[in-house]
Image (tube, rainbow, N blue to C red; front, side, top):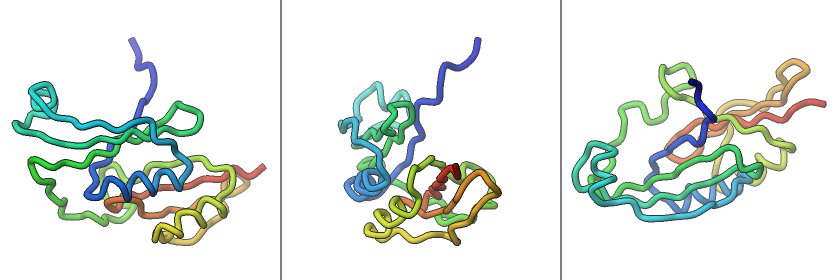
Length: 146
């Protein structure tokens, strides 16, 4: 037996509307929003009294997603390395293929996002840049070079 697909990545955020705006500017579509609470949620996450709001974002092709979760109870806790460098162990980046890196980056700059480093050409394959998204999540943008 094998997995069928990777459905989504989950990001816990402090400002849900700002996170939705960021991923919308990136080119994702808001699939839906809903509260998440109750006994099933408590059992799922192993914490009693969970109250959260969730927004599901989808890539235009419908195959990839980002689940944005804003916890109201219990209060979210900040990790010690909120702005950890790319070299820190653990999940570091979420990469999106884009058709126009310059346009995508310009839209994100309008939301106060700044590149981590420079836009670089990676061989004959991609133009790449890292930006910090909501809650300091590193987002990699890759434009294929034709």
